[in-house]
Image (tube, rainbow, N blue to C red):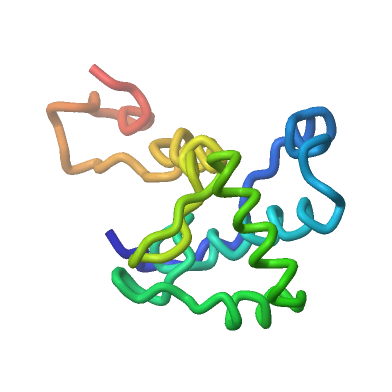
Length: 135
Protein backbone atom coordinates (compact mmCIF):
# COMPACT_ATOMS: atom_id res chain seq x y z
CA UNK A 1 0.00 0.00 0.00
CA UNK A 2 1.45 3.33 -1.00
CA UNK A 3 1.97 6.04 1.54
CA UNK A 4 -0.04 9.25 1.09
CA UNK A 5 2.29 11.24 3.36
CA UNK A 6 6.00 11.54 3.82
CA UNK A 7 7.56 10.46 7.08
CA UNK A 8 9.59 13.28 8.58
CA UNK A 9 11.49 11.10 11.05
CA UNK A 10 12.69 7.54 11.55
CA UNK A 11 13.37 5.68 14.76
CA UNK A 12 16.95 4.68 15.54
CA UNK A 13 17.49 2.49 18.62
CA UNK A 14 20.31 4.09 20.64
CA UNK A 15 21.49 1.03 22.59
CA UNK A 16 21.30 -1.35 19.63
CA UNK A 17 23.21 1.10 17.43
CA UNK A 18 26.01 1.47 19.94
CA UNK A 19 26.31 -2.11 21.21
CA UNK A 20 24.52 -4.32 18.68
CA UNK A 21 25.60 -6.32 15.65
CA UNK A 22 25.50 -3.29 13.36
CA UNK A 23 28.34 -1.78 15.38
CA UNK A 24 30.73 -4.73 15.23
CA UNK A 25 29.69 -6.41 11.95
CA UNK A 26 29.86 -3.31 9.76
CA UNK A 27 32.65 -0.89 9.01
CA UNK A 28 32.01 2.81 9.72
CA UNK A 29 31.33 3.34 6.00
CA UNK A 30 28.87 0.43 5.87
CA UNK A 31 27.11 1.68 9.02
CA UNK A 32 26.75 5.04 7.34
CA UNK A 33 25.15 3.38 4.32
CA UNK A 34 22.86 1.34 6.59
CA UNK A 35 21.60 4.38 8.49
CA UNK A 36 21.17 6.30 5.23
CA UNK A 37 19.08 3.42 3.85
CA UNK A 38 16.87 3.57 6.95
CA UNK A 39 16.42 7.32 6.43
CA UNK A 40 15.79 6.89 2.69
CA UNK A 41 13.34 4.06 3.43
CA UNK A 42 11.33 6.47 5.55
CA UNK A 43 11.02 8.88 2.66
CA UNK A 44 9.89 6.39 0.01
CA UNK A 45 6.25 5.92 -1.01
CA UNK A 46 6.14 2.47 0.50
CA UNK A 47 7.90 2.75 3.88
CA UNK A 48 11.03 0.62 4.07
CA UNK A 49 11.13 -0.11 0.32
CA UNK A 50 13.54 1.84 -1.84
CA UNK A 51 11.53 2.17 -5.04
CA UNK A 52 9.86 4.94 -6.99
CA UNK A 53 6.67 2.89 -6.98
CA UNK A 54 5.64 -0.74 -6.77
CA UNK A 55 7.44 -2.59 -9.54
CA UNK A 56 9.84 0.29 -10.18
CA UNK A 57 13.03 -0.17 -8.15
CA UNK A 58 15.44 2.73 -7.87
CA UNK A 59 18.71 2.15 -9.75
CA UNK A 60 21.79 1.70 -7.56
CA UNK A 61 23.41 4.64 -9.35
CA UNK A 62 20.49 6.89 -8.32
CA UNK A 63 20.59 5.69 -4.68
CA UNK A 64 24.36 6.23 -4.53
CA UNK A 65 23.85 9.74 -5.89
CA UNK A 66 21.18 10.58 -3.32
CA UNK A 67 23.35 9.20 -0.52
CA UNK A 68 26.40 11.01 -1.96
CA UNK A 69 28.58 7.89 -1.88
CA UNK A 70 30.49 5.91 -4.51
CA UNK A 71 28.33 3.27 -6.17
CA UNK A 72 30.98 0.65 -5.34
CA UNK A 73 30.49 1.33 -1.61
CA UNK A 74 26.73 1.04 -2.03
CA UNK A 75 26.95 -2.20 -4.01
CA UNK A 76 29.41 -3.79 -1.55
CA UNK A 77 27.29 -2.69 1.41
CA UNK A 78 24.08 -4.01 -0.16
CA UNK A 79 25.70 -7.40 -0.71
CA UNK A 80 26.78 -7.52 2.92
CA UNK A 81 23.29 -6.47 4.06
CA UNK A 82 21.74 -9.24 1.95
CA UNK A 83 24.09 -11.86 3.42
CA UNK A 84 23.18 -10.75 6.94
CA UNK A 85 19.42 -10.69 6.11
CA UNK A 86 19.09 -6.95 6.68
CA UNK A 87 17.62 -6.34 3.21
CA UNK A 88 16.12 -8.18 0.28
CA UNK A 89 16.16 -6.96 -3.29
CA UNK A 90 13.80 -7.91 -6.09
CA UNK A 91 11.87 -6.37 -8.98
CA UNK A 92 10.01 -4.11 -6.50
CA UNK A 93 13.16 -2.58 -5.01
CA UNK A 94 15.35 -2.86 -1.96
CA UNK A 95 13.27 -3.87 1.05
CA UNK A 96 14.56 -3.29 4.58
CA UNK A 97 13.80 -6.49 6.47
CA UNK A 98 11.84 -5.94 9.70
CA UNK A 99 11.04 -2.34 8.79
CA UNK A 100 8.01 -2.48 11.08
CA UNK A 101 10.24 -3.48 13.99
CA UNK A 102 12.52 -0.55 13.34
CA UNK A 103 9.64 1.89 13.10
CA UNK A 104 7.01 0.20 15.29
CA UNK A 105 6.77 2.99 17.87
CA UNK A 106 4.98 5.22 15.36
CA UNK A 107 2.38 2.56 14.63
CA UNK A 108 1.95 1.72 18.31
CA UNK A 109 1.20 5.34 19.18
CA UNK A 110 -1.01 6.04 16.16
CA UNK A 111 -4.23 5.26 18.05
CA UNK A 112 -3.40 8.02 20.54
CA UNK A 113 -2.94 10.61 17.80
CA UNK A 114 -6.35 9.96 16.22
CA UNK A 115 -9.08 11.87 18.02
CA UNK A 116 -12.03 9.66 18.91
CA UNK A 117 -15.23 10.33 17.09
CA UNK A 118 -17.74 12.14 19.27
CA UNK A 119 -20.42 10.91 16.88
CA UNK A 120 -20.07 7.30 18.01
CA UNK A 121 -22.34 7.04 21.07
CA UNK A 122 -21.69 3.31 21.43
CA UNK A 123 -18.03 3.82 22.26
CA UNK A 124 -17.99 6.83 24.58
CA UNK A 125 -20.11 8.20 27.42
CA UNK A 126 -21.85 11.55 27.21
CA UNK A 127 -20.79 14.62 29.10
CA UNK A 128 -18.01 17.18 29.27
CA UNK A 129 -15.22 14.55 29.29
CA UNK A 130 -17.23 11.72 27.77
CA UNK A 131 -15.19 11.71 24.57
CA UNK A 132 -12.27 10.47 26.67
CA UNK A 133 -14.10 7.83 28.72
CA UNK A 134 -14.83 4.52 27.03
CA UNK A 135 -17.94 2.59 28.07
